[in-house]
Amino acid sequence: MSDPNANSMPSVALFTDGACSGNPGPGGWAFILRSLPDGEETVEYGGEPATTNNRMELLAVIEGIRALGGPARIDLFSDSQYVVKGLAEWMDGWKRRGWKRPKNQPVLNLDLWQELDRAREIHDITTHWVKGHNEHPENERCDRLAVQARDEAARGG
Image 1 (cartoon, rainbow, N blue to C red):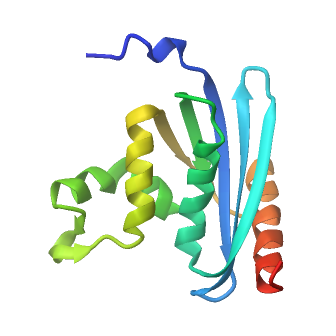
Image 2: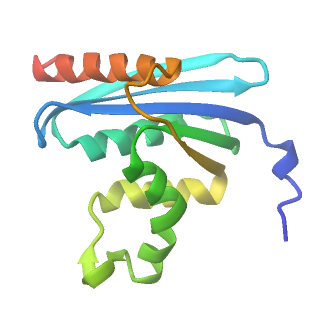
């Protein structure tokens, strides 16, 4: 049965990217959250001194979702297959297997995946993969901000 409140939820576009120098190493994340149809934007970025690229990709999504004021229909755009496939294809299987990957291996970055799973209970999230470094305007903006955040984290800022 469909959610009768789904049509009343606001719609947003969430563009995200993560960057890391070394894996692990200093990393950065960034997002652009755009309200639809008015186009109002929220842009944020941050970094960590010792992390992985996958954690930064996930954290960009989480921080973007945290910036929402309440439940929303989210069109998520990411150049990370890890994020897109994780949300759209893998997460339900991980949960059925007790947060295990095939061959009973633990899910990496479990804390972040579980936070995204809780977000899926509140928000209607549709994922879209975009090719990175391919002149997609919002992806390029997020990449520049994530790299800036990574560099700031590397300098201790």
